[in-house]
Image (tube, rainbow, N blue to C red; front, top):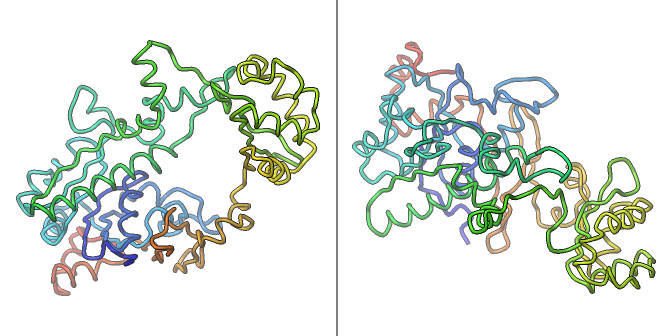
Length: 406
């Protein structure tokens, strides 16, 4: 299997922040040449956000940016300058994909809308990722991952029954639903172009792809009018199903009893024959009716054991369970991730040797070798000289005009 099977595909990548760069990272990790067009004067906000190496801020010191931009090239341009926009147009002539996650109209105002880009490169694949898509009554509204979590109902659904919405932050919109929907769409468009010779415009409304995660509550409400409610870590059809406190400071283990046989196994490990013999608790409906009592009994037992002990004892008798692991635990002590080579160490001029996460899948048993993220403007000379053929005088003129930064 050729791990870098996307070699030969070139992106002009104007995405920034979360979902956009994560979607193009999927391609750079597997060999595509992703040229990140960015600005030092108006930097990608993720470059400006921590955690920073050694707590020292800097455009090249963000661990968050580094993890979302492995393997890319950085071309630093000030797109307010006409000469910079002409560089992008020239680069598009040599590209396969142009990607952005700006609001509707932003690319048009730069002279880089789909019609303009298609006139430059007729078979281009053009990916746009505005919050609500490019048209429709709400298309003018802008937002980020947290906003998308709110308007899709993820915020409302995430929290305890007797408390306010808590929400999952930006995790699902920025790091799951939208990047992978976008990547799948681009792969499909590349295949379509290979078969037909025609390019494609992809209008990925991030709210639409995130709604897929909400799924069942949306369909239930559409069919019955029933308003969804927050139930914390509980489940609507089985019990106990929650995370339970364990021995130590802020240590927890998730336990999910999915059927009546697992309930007997759980009570057996707990040594609670009285619970096992209670006829009302023998079926899920009875346990759900007395869920608080059931959870209190389980919690009193788990509190006397470490999270790892609870997980192993539960799994040994066929009860689904998993310790709630801290990041350091996952990195240093998780045997599965270590065995599968999930973590990779890369050297970086400013971050030093740092740990990066691999894509969560392997091809024919192999992990793709990651390449480090770029310094801002690191590949200016490479892109302008080797792809566009600009000589040193022309590059110097771009820098003198302010079109080329760094």
